[in-house]
Length: 92
Image (cartoon, rainbow, N blue to C red; front, side):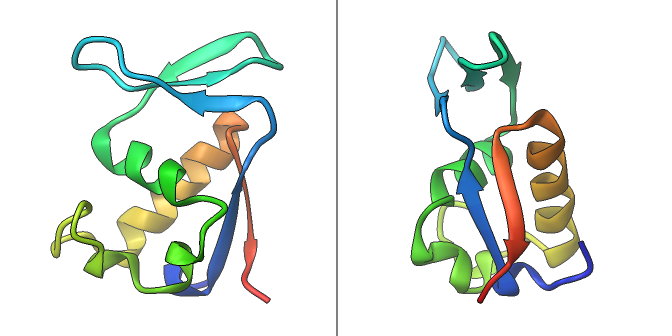
């Protein structure tokens, strides 16, 4: 992706939602008929999609923790994009 996370815009893919089942947080894609278990960082990033929150440095987000680094955020967004649950582009 090569852009810094604070310069990215992520939009949740249509037909996707996050649910909680016990200690798991599967992202459900109704259009593909699938669910992918994700860690807490991926779940939080997905929840920030469609919001202005991705326009600020994500490492400062209280729920992500101060040790979150841009490379981890970028890797996670790439993975979420590959799963088809977000669309990622450079912010306008």
